Amino acid sequence: MRKINKQTPLANFNGDNYNNDCTLWTCKRCDQITFHNKYKDIYEETRLQILTDEQNQLCGYTEIYINELEECHIDHYKKREFFSELTFDWDNLIVATKDDDFGANFKDNKYNSNGIQKSEYTDIYNPVIDDIPFEYDEFGAIIEEEGKIKKTIEVFNLNCESLKQRRKNIIITIQSLKKDGDEIDEIKSSLDDAGFLSVIEQELELI
Figure 1 (cartoon, rainbow, N blue to C red):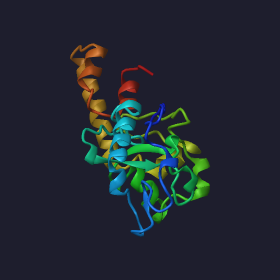
Figure 2: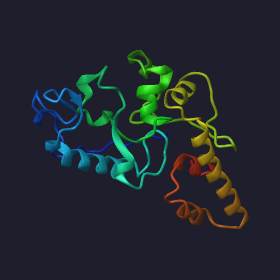
Figure 3: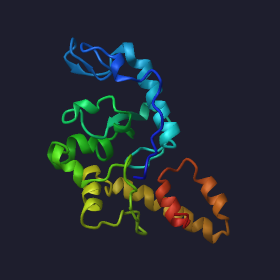
Figure 4: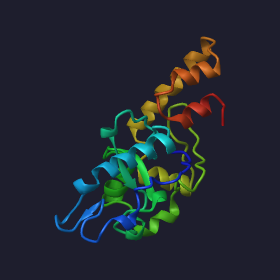
């Protein structure tokens, strides 16, 4: 997880454009949470802009590199269940990978069995607001400290084995390239689509 610098929303992404019966995420007539076909294009444009212009094609929580739009969705950092007034708040929208074991889906559904609770948001980092002070050990794990760091790791399951192994592989690759005498710019360029930019920056001492 790293700081996300939000930009100006799409001109046609405006909560005032959606009526009370059928909105981008809630269709009362269908009695289900969805985005209605009428707004599908807006959703896809929004997802693409956030991913490419604001997140450099990285998942907003895990830093996994996202190459295909089908691999991701727009997450409400603060759940609509608790903060319905933020449904169309651009600063509450983060593009995230679709995986139940970590990230957005874990936050909303699996953390503590039924997902994050409203009172817990003050105890975790918000990547749109906060500079994220994560540091990584040689095995790809985020170094856990008490307080917000520990809680954020738990809510998003950021030290699950899958993520640790991916980060470890990047660390090993960088160490190998350094031994081969590759320059920092060359190493960084070779890892353009590897994701986990915070790990790369730490290993290359670019932070």
